[in-house]
Image 1 (cartoon, rainbow, N blue to C red):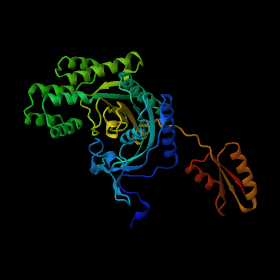
Image 2 (image 1 turned 180 degrees about the vertical axis):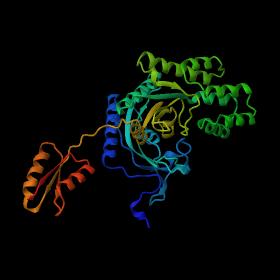
Image 3 (image 1 turned 135 degrees about the vertical axis):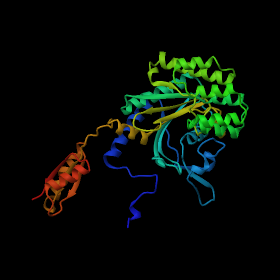
Length: 395
C-alpha cells in the first residue's frame, strides 16, 4: 500500500536540489532586470480577504479560489493573482503620490482549477506593476522590459503577442451584446473556437459584416494586416485601440529596435476582467502556454479608492523553467560545497578545516563517517547532492 503521508496533493509538487538552484538563479536574473528599470520590491500576504479577489474586481472566478475562514468568521483566500494585492497596497500606502509608482514582487499563487491539463495549482510568479502612468511610452517600456527579461533568462527565440481589450469591447458595443453574451463570446474567442463564436453571434442576430470583421481581426498578426483592418473599422473605441497599438509598435521599432519580437493577436482575451487596454502574452518553444502575461488595467485601483491608470506584467517561473529545460538552456550552476567526512578521532581537525573554508566564503559541510562506507560511497552521495568534492579525514 502506498504511504499517502509522503505524497503531495494533486496539482502541487516538491522542488529541490539542482532544479531549485536553477530556478532561483533565473529568478535572481529577472529580479536584476526589473531593478534596472527602477522597480522597488514589495511583499504582500499569501492570503487576503475574499473581497480583494471578488467578481466585482474582475479577477479569478470564485470557484477557482482556495477559500477558508479565520476565527472571526471572515472569508479569506490564498492569492490566485498578485495584481489586485498590489493595487490594494498602492491605494493604501501611495494614495497621494503624484509620480508613477514602480513595484515588483515574487511569490507563489494558488488556483483551485479542476482541469489541470498538466498545470500546477501552486506556481511561482515574478512581476512588476507600473502605477499612475497612462502613456504609450509606459506600454512600450513594459514590453521592452518583458523582452529584456526573457533574454536575461537565456531565451533566444520567443514572440510577444499583443492585443487590445478596447478593440473587442468596441465591436461588442456596436453589436449591442449583453454582458452575459459578451462573457460567452470572450470564452469562445479565447479558446480560438471561432465556429462557436460565429454561431453565438448569428444567434443574437449580429450583422454578417460585424461577424466577418471580428473573426478576421482574430487572425491578424503583422503590422501590415493591422493597418488593413483599421481601414474597415467604424466605431471610435475599436479605432482608437488600433491606433494605440500602432503607436506602441512604432516605439518598439524606432526607439527600442525590438519590433522583431512583436506580433499582434486581436483575438487575445484574458479571464481577468480588470484589463482595459493593451494586453500581451509571450511565447517560446517547449511549453503550450504563455511564459509571460500582462496588460493595462486603468480602472482597477478605483476599486480600492485610488484613481491611477496602470500596466503590469508577470513572469511565470514554472513555465519558464519548463521551456528552458526543453530548449536545453537551463543555467549551469557551479557546484561549490566541500564535504568533510571525519571520524571521532579527527572531529576537531575536521571542524578547524570546515571553519577555515567558511571563513574564506567556501561552502563546507560536516559529514560524520559511518563505519564500513568507502570514499567512493561518499563521492556518490556527494554527487547526488551536487557537492563539488569530498575530503576524507579519518584513520
